[in-house]
Length: 139
Image (tube, rainbow, N blue to C red; front, side):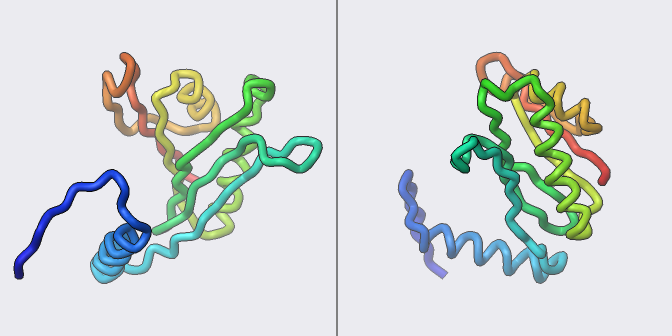
């Protein structure tokens, strides 16, 4: 089979669909269906406008939090814990046994550890002298 490699910073959605579809089919044949479902916990202002929140997904019995953003005015008020608790409750309802998240923000790391997450890996010097930390939690 001949193949030509092409580097791009602007892959089409069709290109990405081919990669995702191929990898998903391989993984499903190898370890079974992922059962991937999106999950979001939104922070809304008094007008119902989304101003922050958590987004991620559940798959293979795990919750993965991809993004977590809290507006500055709400930081330091336990909002991260509330977001994580809601996402974890939904993950448990979906049959998940664990959760994982990563960060290179030292304050976020502390917040996640307060919620019962424990470090399972690190990349020192990831960016600007910061360590990227990978954390997990049994649900």
